[in-house]
Amino acid sequence: MRNLIFSILLLLCATAGAQTPIIQVTGGKVQGIDSKEPGVALFKGIPYAAPPVGELRWRLPQPVIPWKGVKKCDTWSNIAPQPYQRPGAFYFKEFYWEDDWTRSEDCLYLNVWAPKATLGKTDARLPVVMWVHGGAYMTGYGFTRSMDGDAWAKRGVILVTINYRLGVLGFLNHEALEAESERHISGNYGLADQIAALQWIHDNIAQMGGDPDNITVMGQSAGGVSVKYLVTSPLSKPMIRRAIIQSAGGLSDMLTEKPDERDFTKEGTEAMKKIGLTTLAEMRAASIDEVAQAPVWSFAAPHPDGYLLPQTFQEAVLNNTVADVEYLIGGTLDDGFANQCQQIDAFCYVRDSLSQKPVYQYLFARKLPGTDKVGAFHSSELWFMFNTLGRSWRPFTSADFDLSERMMDYWTNFAKYGNPNGESGGSWRPFTLTESYVEVLNVRHNFK
Image (cartoon, rainbow, N blue to C red; front, side):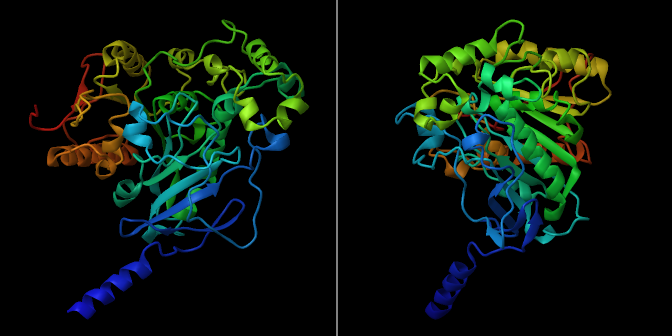
């Protein structure tokens, strides 16, 4: 018996992290690994654009640089340059302990979780979801502790998470950058990265068993705001089948303003001058640490530029020029939801009045257990909709795991059918002009 157990352990060790079939994508061949969940393949760090370094700093993303041979996608990529989380801070304790990933401008990579059985089968046509992380456009990356695609792939949905440029590197407006641009624009580089990642998915996901005509864009916080811009931009909205907007308000734009209300170009130019950088040559030669000193917090976010974003999200909704798709939208109870809900309701009302496509609204109300009695805080739902409760230090109960399974079914059903109930129907009804229905997501018995 002991020898049998030892042999089984050896077999498990030998097969853990095993390689998957080789797949041809833009730039060359890639090979992932077996994920933790049996039957799920994981591709870590696939490049979707050229590294935006040197002369490519503050330029729109350029095509992937081809590679020779097979790229082994078994290691997480660099993350975008960003401040380190402060030890002891709330979100550090919640999500970012042992956060020591390499920060580099060479950060334009994505990760794919897909059922192993359909790799290479272009006729499988599984639904696909692209996740855009939050972090106020200043922090975050596509493989934080709370995020994982195993449970999604297990339910037959391919999950793709992405990194994109943040802060001053992702959203700087500057007169010299506008002068060199063919379209006389600057800024929105991080949004352009997201669009490039979506284009990569559209062009390549069939090789991994995905359906390029069934892509859902999903994000939370700044990622949710990004989804608003993705369904607004004429460059991205044709590739979007459905959208999930989490904790990012509703009809309001959030984190951005109209260009005629602020001179973003002047602000960016002055910010560079304050750190002693006045020419493009100086700006592109400066180190990351130097550039990071620029005071850009107040405008490090997407905004209308006449190209990627011809108008604000609010204008696009009211003009009925946003992507005409199904939407799932909501927030968390203790994240100022009362202040957000009017804007979310307004979005739902407008969509219902202008479109035949349904909008589903939710409220995540589970007050998380643990020593920090902070309730259903901003980002608290991530543990549940990625089915990663086991990675948290919080004392989750069986009821929490049941809630997570229910949310996973809702979110993946929406990606599959545009309806969180799935094909057989259920109790979650659309939010309409005649019925303001909100699905309250909570455990199904009371806790003190």
